[in-house]
Image (cartoon, rainbow, N blue to C red; front, side):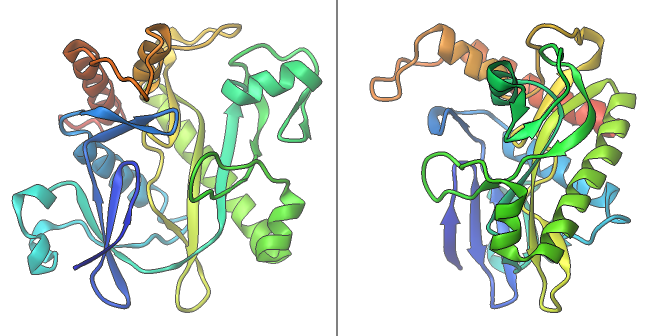
Length: 282
């Protein structure tokens, strides 16, 4: 099988002209660097969370999954290393836009708001506090950078890239999916502060949800029972690992070992998010 992409976490193989195999590794990245540790089972957790959400929003939008059943995979992928961490998916024409939606003001959005009252050029009400829920979720797309950072772009620029009608549809679907899932997650004790989606077009030009959905790698998950406006929040995602790297002045050029307890706590946070959302034991 031809490997056509090796990202920070995912490997993509071409099965044939219509199908791909997406495999989620146990690698973890932070600040655009793949860290020199593996988080055991992280790929399986991410794969299962995505599978759960794809199914949850299938009434809103079709998705790219053909099967997640191990016994239905091409023969080459019916080995232990691919089990529970892979999906056989349709090949799509992917849109060149990261569809980011923010329901709360945090991270780079908070930084920008403090400077001029806007997030990605969108004017927000005065007087918002850090981590506060926005009056309504906002669509803040970015480019897809092959390397380095994605760049913020305006909705008008998305229209220029993919056409106005498709841009309108993508924006509406992004907010609709986020709203449904955020309401559900809140009922399970998790606040989804923001997330990113990726869409593609199938052979008939229909919009299809692809890649990963609402995982702790593509979203900010906060424990609802600890949520408090006016400060940064604890999280179920890799923010814990990021915070450790920052507080220890970790340098990718000259990396010091990352302690086992930091890796294990990160693993527990991923598994905790899966179990809370799905109600299933990992």
